[in-house]
Image 1 (spheres, one colour):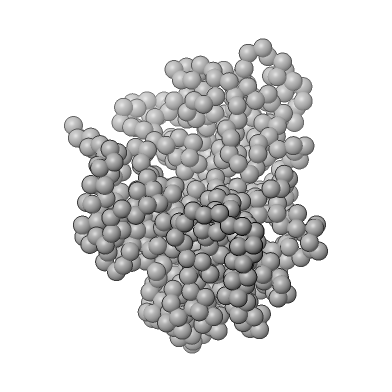
Image 2: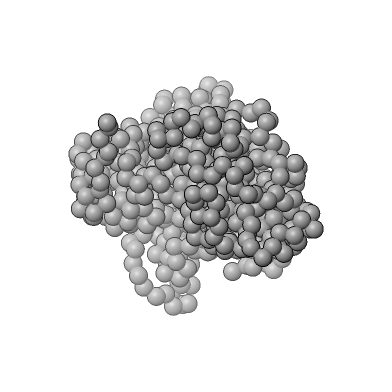
Amino acid sequence: MPQQFRSYSARRPSREVKTGRTTIGGAHPVRIQSMLTSDTMDTAACVKETLGLVRAECEIVRITAPTVKDARNLENIREALLAAGCDVPLVADIHFKPEAALEAAKWVDKVRINPGNFADSKKFNIREYTDLEYASEISRIRERFAPLVALCKKRGISMRIGTNHGSLSDRIMNRFGDTPLGMVESALEFARLAREFDYHDFVFSMKASNPKVMIQAYRLLVSRLDELECTEGGGWTYPIHLGVTEAGDGEDGRIKSAIGIGSLLADGIGDTIRVSLTEDSEHEIPVAQALAKIAAHRKPAPELEAWPFDPFSYTRRASSVLQVGEYLVGGTELVRVAVVQAAYDKVAHKIAGLGDYKPELIIENCGLVEVDPRDAAAVARVNASPAPLFVTIPDSCGLPVIGAYRLLASQLDARHPILLKDTFTPAAPTDFVHNLLNAATNIGSLLCDGIGDAVLVQGEEAPGQSLRIAYNILQAAGVRIFKTDYVACPSCGRTLFNLQETTARIKAATSHLKGVKIAIMGCIVNGPGEMADADFGYVGGAPGKVNLYVGKTPVKFNIPQAEAVDRLVDLIREHGRWVEPATAV
């Protein structure tokens, strides 16, 4: 595994890959994508949804092609769009069916393949592969993959080699595990095969529903590409497609997306992005645009002599535990939520009604020591203290937030707990969505780095909203689980039930189950794999039928959709995770 990772003061240099009228990579802006939720066989619905996305300034549109029949209908969709004066680049999304990819490649500008299931069926088999058996498997994949590469090269269309954490092949799982390394190696196998045919018009993606896994996988990918650029003759600067898959809906979906996508954009990684929300596809575009805009206006980060954390795996920074007011801060204690006194005063009269969103620390009472990480004398004074100190960065430092706290963590003895801020310009006039995404990008990124023992959201002026943002960032970053966690995929043409309605019904029945993680998947493409990160799963198995999972193991099959939410509740009861909701007084 590479030992080096670097962030880029500007965008990571990448080669250009043309997708229809749009070029990804190079000096071109970060491109905004989305995916249709309509049935691919419903030409009129696909055309209508695509035109709506284009009006919302979506630059690339993806459509699922689960069968050859669906792939063939892409011709009709393309012709109808052209007749409407729309030549937006179209991408066919392929899983399991190489023959569907070959049909789709006749009509679209780009084909997305998933290395985990393009030529492999996933059976969760546990076995050892000898080197000879492994090489034989690669030869088999080459035979299945070569015709698609040849057709894409002939037509001059591009490809996305898109690995998903939830759908790695058994071969990869048995050699590398369900890990970021496995995700990267899975994609590189297909990239090397494409390069054998001198085909280079492809981009990479490393999607996961867990932002930590997603961030680590992309970092590892970029590090491997940098390494290969030096050792295998160059030409490995392929563009990067960013996305957090199954992010969910509402604020939670936006926060989880911002943590994953925003943090990588802040490091200069990413040439095209798709925000995956369990909502109408047009709602994804403003979020993606806002994340790209935030990244484009970010100041260059200060240089680090060494990373204060392992960029390829998560370990929380080893600070000492301090008593701060009523709460313990640091070490393995919960990451605390802080407010300024003025904000506390505004909510003090309704503290009892704030539930899980209560302020825990008041900044003015914390004994905080403010240190500019560039001030060597100030850092030395803190490090010379015989007792650990609670440290943060002054708003006046003028640095970008992520870079500033990384620099502080690299200079400060690990024993000193750190308070994170979302912004150093709290008075700047911005809207709520910007505040939400900026806070999630900055604080969420640092939490995923293992940095931070308390957080202060000061970019959002409304105290109730700032508290909610803070807690939801902690939940999405996986450092403090205080409510039910949902992994909900965005709808697409493969979906076997109405995801938005179903997600709402499941949330209504289970949202009081603190610490339980439930995955809601419209089909089996990512379902079983993403179940591994969930306690329970609700997965479309056939039209009108649902399969229920415990972890990644299916336990109940072909349940009528009308009964499935009740059966999910029964399953949670059976495993001792159910509690009755509190009765309103």
